[in-house]
Image (cartoon, rainbow, N blue to C red; front, side, top):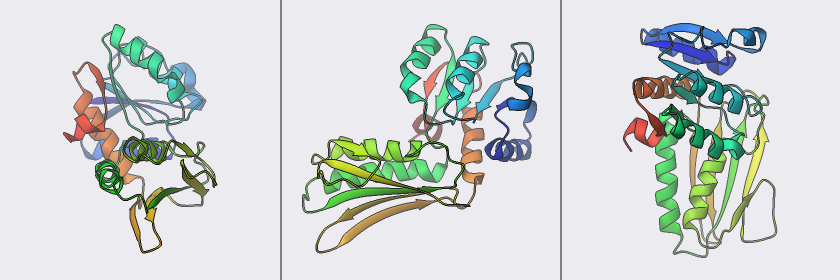
Length: 238
């Protein structure tokens, strides 16, 4: 499979390593220093583009790939205020897109566990739920996209919580997400249910970027020759 990397930072390099191990070809690497190479002609032989940049460039990069009729796997977070515009354009132009806030297989299993636990805990009002996420200092958005996904799952099932906030709060209807930026942490997410009697806590800790990169390549393999909008649930068959 011919892959274009849109963004060639640490994640892009990790994805490249996994893709080559799986005998795929990296036919284009687009980054800040060669943005002028991001053309329809240069991506004409690409089966799938994998986009990992940042919140300020992701939307334009995804739209550009879709306009070139190139299927795109996007892992950038912090830009979903424009999601509906991307979704509309992709659908109207018969494009192909996979988006996930986190491509780690372990994290996506963790999402399922988080949802199940929230359903169980909703009956037990004596527990208060809080969240913490820890990432490296180069992480530009806070809370992380993964933390927001986890928070939205909790909000869907815990009746006592109305919205998430990214700070400590005295309002019991707020779901607190505490964000810490510590090097070299690749990513840790904790959901804690606390009562006067005991605590219940689930934690996912990434040891490296390999899990994210492997999931992104898996998503690219899934997307080849498909049309539509997908998430990791479809990629993993969850």
